[in-house]
Length: 140
Image (cartoon, rainbow, N blue to C red):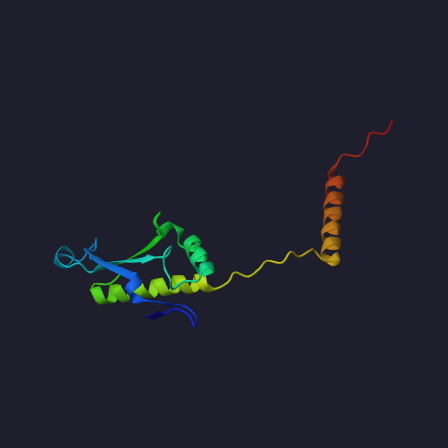
């Protein structure tokens, strides 16, 4: 079990790992050893996640989720399988923790009387400065 929060834990049987060859520099090691990890977690059908967390996770990681609802995390930062595997799990935990936090409800606020007064006063001064730039009216 991977503990996310006090109330949420993901069973490791829900995770699928696939080891693939990493791209980039590394010479012979890159060509021979499959060190990169592709971690797959079926968010849509997971029994470990409450519905509200599932919905937030789907929207939070929408670029990394397939049409079937499977979250894919690629980890290829390190040179060893174990380090990449640990990195992928940490990134999954971080993502689910972020989704587990309920977003703060935005409360509408209104400008204070003092701020309205300051705004109108600055508009009045600006208008007065522009009016002073006008040529004087023609005397008839």
